[in-house]
Length: 136
Image (cartoon, rainbow, N blue to C red; front, side):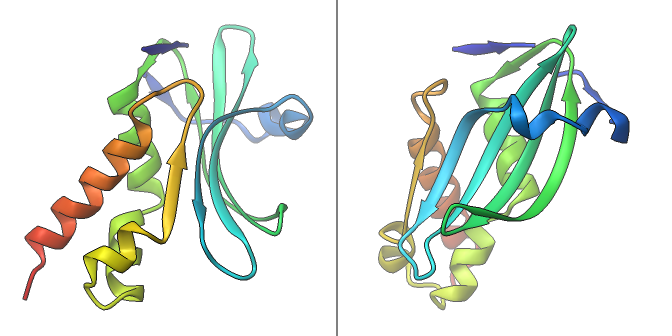
């Protein structure tokens, strides 16, 4: 599936002023933790562009915005996953939190997207590849 709207373009801060009021959640990685933590890819449109951001939240309150981009064109499942996981390095973080324990890492998160059906699978593949490549 393709999400219409990458040609990645540098964003202008004034484009983001009212984004949070009109955002759509494209993808989410939720964690089994206290406080409840999630990383989300959110987007809103601005004329022909899609304004995207990776945001971190705890107990449903925004904590940090990790990155913002403007997408102009088509964002495929692979491009969205690559953008998300290069901005917020899931595999590397899990590897260090769980000391290289793959089972604990894979059972600690759930990725989902209403727009990209294989998002959870792609995230798990990325974690598995990272763990395999970094095995001591």
